[in-house]
Length: 400
Image (cartoon, rainbow, N blue to C red):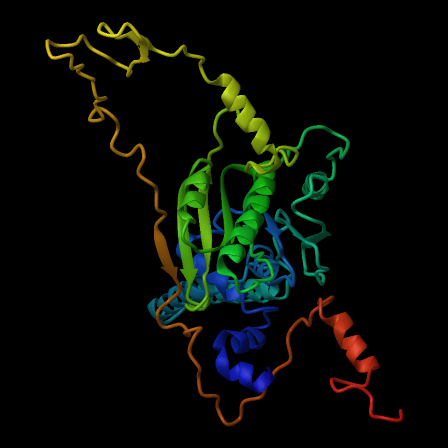
């Protein structure tokens, strides 16, 4: 699809290039932050499946450079406007303070007043172009060897040969915008995405501190409420959020988990990840071994003298030979025991923002911009090289 047609179709694609973002997905994280205030009191972050780096770019500009976007930027402008209107006739001291504030804002925009205590680590299988203040790792989040690499990046004094897979300085926030290459088979795509989310969660449990936050992309499906209930074990609040920059025609959404509270005695490790997987036969054998062994209940028939199997919980027979069976009273059971838990659904983003499914008319003087960061190692790069070597899409002309 050409640049002009894509510019006309997607306003966020066009806006991302105008504001200097690497991808339109940056607006998804910004709108999630507007709703859940994800970046409050956050200094240590891990970004999983980070390529091409748009979410890491948001973290760099917000946490390190101190820039404000969306609602925060609007509130800051309103506060400055009110202060300017109240100080109609500024004094000499207020003028000096205003000059100092202006110099401070200018230095923060130039990166001179960046925060030194922020540490951000980005992980992906694909290479990520460098970003200011971001530590990038090229690793597989499903492999156990990734945990020591991540802990070493978070804490330079960590010993990779140590058996301990817990961070000495845990992180405040773990985010993941990863998704598999969709096949069009929705059930298969939802399952693969859930396994990718579990891989991100297993890694997050090793580095997340109590009270931390976890944000990841999911594909909403028929049985996805089981995933919500499983995450509810580790987090106090679990929400499903749909940013306005995410197309309504897409099944993608984002699960936002707040206030990490692991169960007592839980120990996270990628050697024993969450989920059953290959340990299913072993778990079934352990369950069968732990089941109580009971002898069959036999009862002699007083007419024939034969021993027959008797129903459980028998009472004495009446004069007609009828036995009264006690039925278990379920009224004492808690009402919410077997009721499934459904996560709250939250729509993020201002209603005045662009509609990601709508097409907007371009002005006459519109100029199509190039992407901020072209793909570093796209999977189709080899195919393009082979097609060029063969003379293009239709091959070399005859006789050449």
